[in-house]
Image 1 (tube, rainbow, N blue to C red):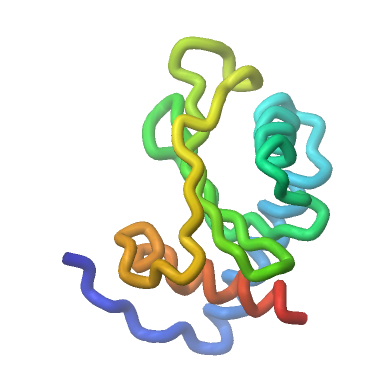
Image 2: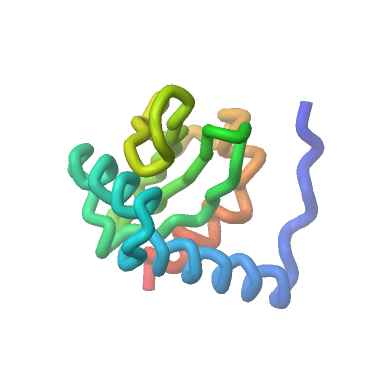
Length: 124
């Protein structure tokens, strides 16, 4: 069971926002193979990367990345990008699921502050 973390202070909220802006910039504009592939997979699922924010992105394993996107419409999506049997720039989403409103979901709880930061950005 996850223990609730205390709400972030102003400095932590600024850090989360800055991290999301950097990851989002990579998602939207980077020409690196990983980012172009993830960008195309997100677009295939009907999400506009130009109006969405990547609020979490980290490795789950040597060939697996977990990401959380927040859209302009305040929808929240979790994905797992897997490139186990191919090159990093030719991977696939082994998981894509909507977390919108699923505040009791383990992944939502684990990244609640990042998601809340993204929802705040989307509301601006």
